[in-house]
Amino acid sequence: MVPSCPFIYIIRKDVDVYSQVLRKLFNESHGIFVGLQRIEEELTGKSRKSQLVRVSKNYRSVIRACMEEMHQVAIAAKDPASGRQFSSQVSILSAMELIWNLCEILFIEVAPAGPLLLHLLDWVRLHVCEVDSLSADVLGSENPSKHESFWNLVTILVLQGRLDEARQMLSKEADTSPASAGMCRIMGELMRTMPILSPGNTQTLTELELKWQHWHEECERYLQDCTFASNPHLESLCKIMLGDEAALLEQKELLSNWYHFLVTRLLYSNPTVKPIDLQYYAQSSLDLFLGGESSPEPLDNILMAAFEFDIHQVIKECSIALSNWWFVAHLTDLLDHCKLLQSHNLYFGSNMREFLLLEYASGLFAHPSLWQLGVDYFDYCPELGRVSLELHIERIPLNTEQKALKVLRICEQRQMTEQVRSICKILAMKAVRNNRLGSALSWSIRAKDAAFATLVSDRFLRDYCERGCFSDLDLIDNLGPAMMLSDRLTFLGKYREFHRVYGEKRFADAASLLLSLMTSQIAPRSFWMTLLTDALPLLEQKQVIFSAEQTYELMQCLEDLTSGRPVHGGPDTQQCQDDDIETTKVEMLRLALARNLARAIVREGSLEGS
Image 1 (cartoon, rainbow, N blue to C red):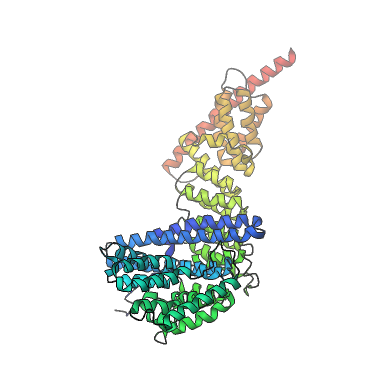
Image 2: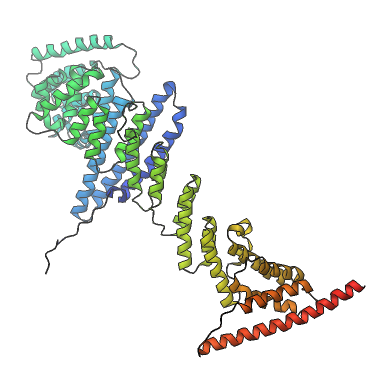
């Protein structure tokens, strides 16, 4: 009883590539990635930014589609453990889309002061979406203004800057509660007149700031006049619209996170915030919201790095926090196309974009079919992509011939000669083991492997001797120039040609070909007796096929063969029988050759005499 470890832990790298839902993420994003690389040359001037923003939105739409599908899978999960696992994956995908969206606004869209806040509002609305289900719940009731969540809904709408919807909700309160109707109308008017820089608006930032200041003072006046004092809900809304930090922090539960708090705070205190000032507001919002009760989580650190415009820190934090390389590889590639990473080279000879793409592609090669996507990622890595592809492609298990052909086609398209030869050799060996000689010969020719072609040709000849016919005739008949790869292959092709010519009853051509095979020394000596035996029917023809000179050459071959044959000793019965057969063959050949020689001499003499 030797003490031993009670468990074996199987550690599998890049486990995410095996998820059926995430597989769609990898497949769809591959097309976007390749498309971006191909249009790089067309990206110029003003159209460049809009094209890159469009590509970014395409990536995000793929993430959202996968997130929705994963959510449905989580709901349909039969056991709680699977449900939790899928829900966790939904959270990760949601975080990925949240980070990507913020990077799109700050680094790709590069929104200036004014439009920046509009983009951030859209960002928060997209990712804090509980309000829609709450709205449906409240509006679906018989009396919405009396619903227990009515004021929560109005407050969330104000926190998200959805003031038109908040006004509509207040109008329902005004209709059912005459006591607060006047206050609701005043609040509704404040909401309606709040100046916001809309996308199609031509007013300058200075004009907006002046109007906003005037509106802000008006809100403050109503608060100081205690206009809303009798209704705590409306008073709280007025304080929120004044950007009161204490009033905002009272709504922590409705805000749900610090970056929502940040955007709401900016909306009601500094709507024309400049990008450079974002980091100060972001840091103070994080500190205020957490209040020292908890420490920032990885997602908080990533978003903070984005608000600080520290791209490299965003990528580094994401690489540590996320479970696969998909996100950082594609985001970094896109940012690289935005010319934002040019200065950041790594110490081992590659830039950050290429390093992350290589890591992601390596992970894809762990999957039995997704490896095909990885090939394109290696293709677009100019420094180390080629050598990495060569190393990875050699490790692909060639389970089926169809897969092998795919790999082979990829290698041939990229002129990867060594890999092509190696794959063909492997397939030729497998075919020989399975006794598929035609396939083996085909692969050895494709590999240009003379030694293996010789080996397979010998197997063909041995099979012929045993069975009396050739297999894979189509292949042998159509060898063409490939026949010259090795002497044995040349012999196989020519010997098959002899049979074809003989079958066509072109006996003179067949005789010349047979003799040339023996005298040119390309026929293996072990096969000479077979060739001489093939000559017997030609020697016995009514007309003389072999001339006297050709007959002498055949006789010489027979003598060379018989004189060099080893003498067997011992009483082996089988050996004795084989020797008797060989002796009989030799005697028949000698007789046929002598008879043919006589006929040839007579025929040639009579021709000379005439």
